[in-house]
Length: 310
Image (cartoon, rainbow, N blue to C red; front, side, top):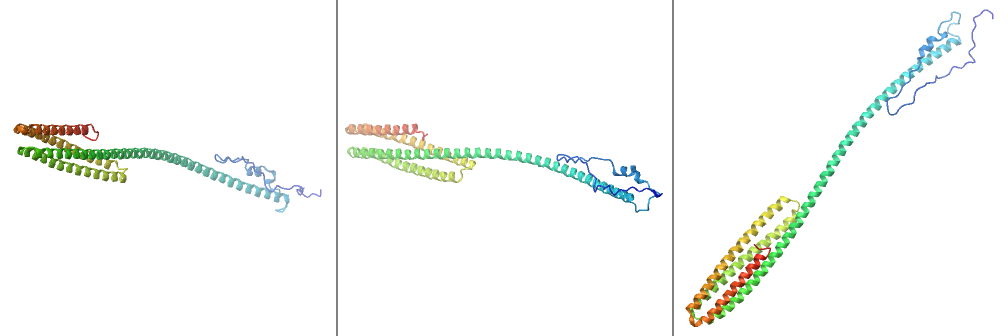
């Protein structure tokens, strides 16, 4: 009113401490969205208070202070906005890095899963192989036990045959003393047969004992080396060779025994012809020898029918 420049009273107006910041909520699954609002410098440049008032008091009016305050606030908000933008970019980088690591972890997990499946299949194959080896070992143990039983039966049969042969030899010796002097040849023949039987029985017994010993050793080896299939195969081959050798030995023994029995029968027939007076005793002796031969043939036939034989 008195001509002084009009100064607006801004005491009733209170400048906000901070300007509201409108931003979109953060997206956890992607980079942070940044809302680009109207720059603060546009408001400052468009404000009518930006022009200097030549009539205003120098640097001490409330309007100038308000403008400076708004300008400072705008600068602060601009810095905060820049910091927020940088933070969101950094957050987007971290999220991208985390996604990449997650993809790598997923790929690594899938690779480990494939390896685990392969290991599981390998373990299953090894378990099946182990079961097969166990079954093979059990089968071999049963076969060896059966072979031992057959060997025992063969020993028993040989013992019975030996007893029967000795009994027949004793009877032949009794008949021999009743024969004439020419019957000494028959006695010598019987003695040769007896000695041959003793030697052959001893050889067969020793061979069977050796075979049984080898079978026991083989059983111990099987217990210690149940999972070594190659050694089992070698052991089976070696046992097969031993059994073949025993079979050959038994065949040789049978052939020699058959020859000696035939020779003994021929000698008995010769004695019967040479000694007419003792023809009846010689006939009995021949019949006894024939019976002995038949019994030995029966033993051989039983041996052939035996599964553990030829």
